[in-house]
Amino acid sequence: MNFDPSFFKKFYEPDGRENFLFWSSLAALPTPTPPVDCRQGRVLIFKPDSIGDFVLFAPLLAGLRSRHPNETFFFFGMKEVCELARSTGLIDEVIEWDRHEYEKRQGYWRDTLNMLHKFQVDTIFYPCVSRESNADEMIAVIPAPEKIAPRSDDCNINKKTARYNERFYSRILKTLPPGTHEYLQMQYMADQLLISQRPVSFTSDQNAEKVQKVLEEAHVTFPYIIIAPGSRQSFKCWRPSRFAAILNWYLQNTQASIVLAGGPGEEKIAEKLINGTTDPDRTHNLTGKFSLPETTALISRASLFVGNDSGLAHLAASYSIPGHVIMGGGHYGRFFPRQDSPLLRVHTKMMDCFGCNWNCTRDSAECIIQARIPTEDLQQDCRFLSHGRMADYQLCNA
Image (cartoon, rainbow, N blue to C red; front, side):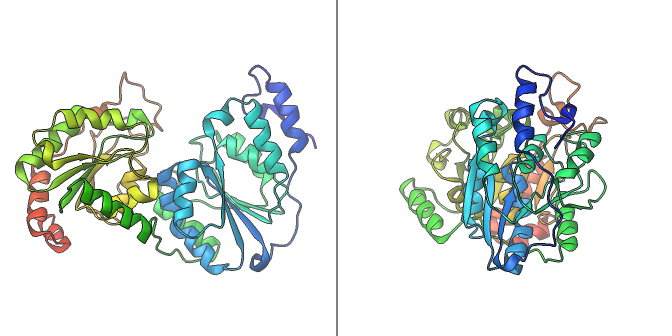
């Protein structure tokens, strides 16, 4: 099978030609066959993207699993996303993937492609509107008769490459116009697959029990406010000093406890906030203390959430936790604001360069740095916390 090497990722870098020959020896076009009988098949859900992407996709996954309960579902993704996928109870087995090592195009890259080439599966579903070259090249080496993906926009790969790579799929789903909210894109895909999206839980009773025990040991009292100052992508982060000011405002104007949350590697940011707190007895740093499903249990019990545009913000939205998300204009309107969680409000500095796909033309992301949470919004939070009922929060935001 002859493939055009110019479409191969990193072909023009050192060892690129050798890597292309290795990849092309494994890659093959899908064999035209009737759709696989899902009642006895093996399906691979291919999701090499981020936590928030999976949270938005999960209701579609739940609908797919409900329609095909006898099928074996595999999930391919980054470690933390695999952890979350497993916690939903919708996945039978996971395959963890290390993006950083894969991008080196060395031993791990070859081992991954060899493993996938030997993987026996009937159907692959890659539900990403902004497909990636990494994913297309991996899916190309898996000898599955049915490979389904949506038509890609030009967010991660240009349209010419995306169209060329469609040859590696047996079915390309239609998508809504670029920039359409991801929630609607998932619904559009579900409609084409003739399935209904279903609600999903990303945690368990066991996770909740562990979180409750830790909260008791740390003397965290209810209600509590989650502040999550980190993000996997550092350029999306509001300045720690801004979070510190919000943290201290809540301490001075409410009786709520403050819980700092986040994943491994975000401890230093949380420590900065802890060191500047005006009431250390009511401020608790639980950053890096929990797995992602356990952190989800922590968020699901919070009264308010304050954080960056991140996976944790999407988890808060999925549990209808009110609060505030700081975000920029790279993908504004596509992932946040969440139409299904209007009480989680978005704050940004509106600029004429919105929709830049994070190709920032300025020295820094001013849309994030200059974002503010208005005092009147914080005062509404106070009224909600004093009543403690969602209906009152909705009323004061009317």
